[in-house]
Image (cartoon, rainbow, N blue to C red; front, side, top):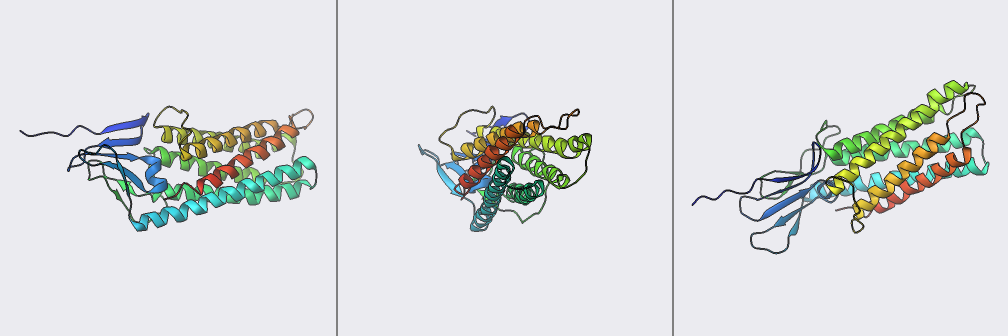
Length: 282
């Protein structure tokens, strides 16, 4: 009698598939998880009759690539978080002028730009699964760019990178002198808020990816902690951005203390997230 394998089981949210389970031709089951594959180069395989699964690793080319990209991205976020925290501390303590603070933020922003783009490269060049295949990850040729809007990890990292670029506009405009209150809100405050919104969207998609659907608590998962800490940092950045709005009548900030402390604590969250990311490697 001819037997038929069960259809693949897809999990995720909306159009995004973040976990896929299928039966390989030789029997058993194979489980691909988006973050596990792109961060650690692993796929889970359950041989026929086995009670526990084993992790199959991608080839050495992919593993070395993932380690290198992860180290660069994590280091960039650590440096960016440290510099943003330093800039906020200088602003709060009044130990430097506006140009000094803007310079520190700008260098930190370059680090965030680097971390955002390298995170996108990590998604683009991650080893791929073959649905219905034998349960192995395939290494593809190196690429500097791709367009994959059906993937939650690609959209999340692309939006993150876009957010860092919008922040760059905000940081560059902060060097301008002699602006009116309306120009400050349009050229500096608006890009800041837009960048924060993009960071929040990116963080939500990262939670969807690692939770395979609705965000939930996964305290034993290192990747979940990285995403959660970074999302907290994005929330604090948004609070700080709202507090930097200049009142049209007086030109005063809504609350300078909240702006500085929100930036400092949010930056520390990204620093911690970067440190944790150093351990999420193949």
